[in-house]
Amino acid sequence: MKYSTSDTARAILSIVDTIIAMYKDKLEAKVEAPAKKQIRSLLRLPGEEEEENQDES
Image (cartoon, rainbow, N blue to C red; front, side):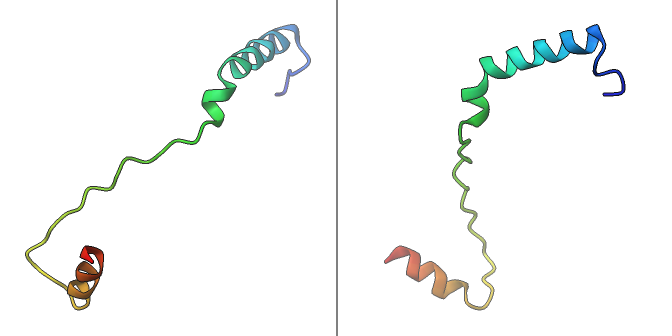
């Protein structure tokens, strides 16, 4: 930004602004996280049985 008033900088910023405008919808779209994979363990910590039984009902 030291030379932000130069012709080169203005040209680059113009290109960047055009690209941003082209992809604005995609940039603003909410990205959904993939479903969290449930991992079953052979070892149960205290309180885990209770949580699992609540999920099944």
